[in-house]
Length: 226
Length: 153
Image (cartoon, rainbow over all chains, first blue to last red; front, side):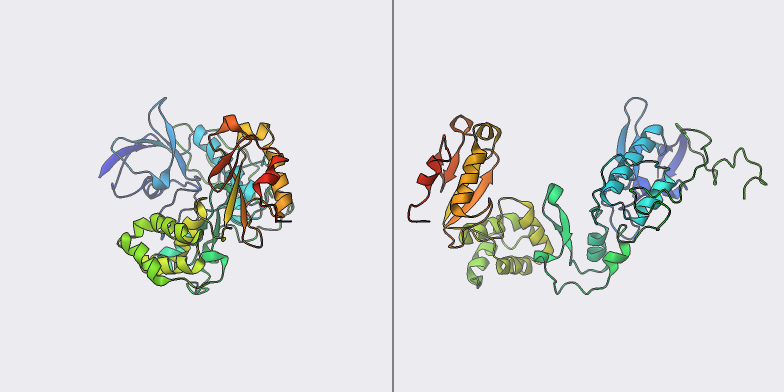
């Protein structure tokens, strides 16, 4: 076992775990997108960023790919992390505003605006389908092609292939091919349908985080909470 | 197109059929055929026991690999900064118009392939056009005609 600091608390974890698994083991909720328990971590969506390091020497790392080392100082909800996470989500939504999963995540992170022009693409290149096809379905029918901004997911030679059994697992796991709810602002980049308009009790948590759900349960009396 | 499997076998055997030698194998195939035929990539995937999509991914990732057949003569127009400010865009447009193709394409008679490069490191000569490894400096849209065979329309 290795011991490390998690939001100011001394905790222990199995050295074989990655940081995300340890953080989730201690019940702290980090938004993830390209992570799935049955698949190898890939570290592309960066939604699971956490801050590691001491005082002025901190850095942001993707927790799903980061190993746990003795004495690691991890903050999962510092203001820097929250700001970065919102920016990453903003960029993802600008690419794929039609995704329900991304819109739900925006409501969860209380993202209020998207400052980028929507691209309306249908893929965020999270690689879930590629890993699903290879690791769980053992078909290896889809993969990446091209490079940089031209990168896309495809079948060999962009043609229907014998490897594909049409099992549909890639569509099952895809976070963006599910349509978002047709709420009051169905055509806007950010539908804000489920956004929590209540004020949060503290603007940021620094070292620690609040576990009260719903928010304000620390100041509200039980009869106030419906 | 039919491919000669014994030729591919000799290339693959040179690398002992190692999966890690995929790029080297594809380079050797490209040296033989001037491009990567689809059947050859299928065969390589089968021999190396790797997914076909992985071979396709590597072949599309690198600009050095081409999935389209190349013409007999290859013309590269430098689009680097120095060549750009000295009018390489007009040179390219003139070539495109003369050959009737866009950059990256091959003429229908498989004679010419027109490509752009980002810098050839010969900025003092700019705009540079390379025809079959032969460097021609200080190109202008007028001089371009001398690069091509006059018998072509």
